Length: 116
Length: 119
Image 1: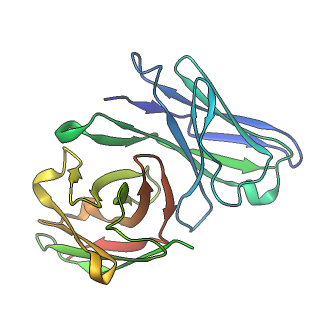
Image 2 (image 1 turned 60 degrees about the horizontal axis):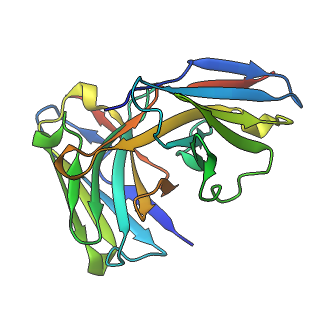
């Protein structure tokens, strides 16, 4: 099954841009990855799904146009432009793997985004 | 509008069985392609997928926890129930249920319910 790796922290100034990275383990370059935003004290919120072709399907409800995704090789990126205070959150990536009895859903360790 | 809400005990003792209920609205778990999953998050740690049940009663479990988990649905009550046996303090976490459709993402999540395991 894939392992998803995320840096534990990131920071960006108000109004700036930041790119968060989720890296799939070797051999899983064709996998779709989901991005989730988790504000402090809240449940996760789906942002969007990405593969090497870019966004897959639609953005989550209420996700602003400032959020975009890209995929390249083993990396899946979430870019936030014109960062706002409300974007300060933990960002998790996740992916499903397998089918039938060997199905699993895996998550990365999450990246805590601090808005300076 | 899809909503999900988790409920259950806030405190359980070691070795006890935890029973959590996810009550949802805005969709039916008898509709083809629909599923409901459970995910937990220990304090300050990563999300950890536990189980998933589909409209056709197909069930999937985390391999590392499968022996301790049971997921069931009651379509008439719009509820999904997760039981977890032999609880241990390391199982202390916030438990979330989430909606899944057409084998895609978990698009809508509940607010979560915090469960502490302590004697």
